[in-house]
Length: 116
Image (cartoon, rainbow, N blue to C red):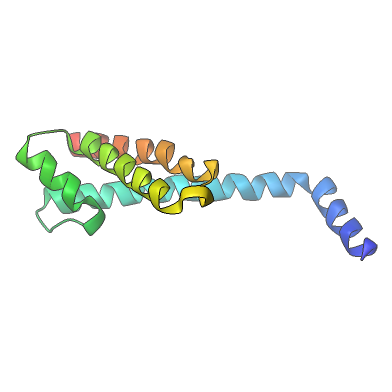
């Protein structure tokens, strides 16, 4: 058992550049995916093809009340995060709150692509 844990330590210690490279690549792919997701949602709403269920309430509110679609979506994401907190209770972790800053990015991309 000690040999296995020593090998894992050796790999992590001496190959830290590889680990950092993998994490950087993962973050870039995630960021690229958020851009593609945002562009697809905005294209669907602009072309009147319809909206996904997660965006439908925010889109309806933004059309009815003439609100900004990105800001309305952000408020909706925050409401859904609060509902998730209520359901999870003690099992809710601070890690789960990372969805808020990431939703800020996605909704800013909504505004960016919606203005084009």
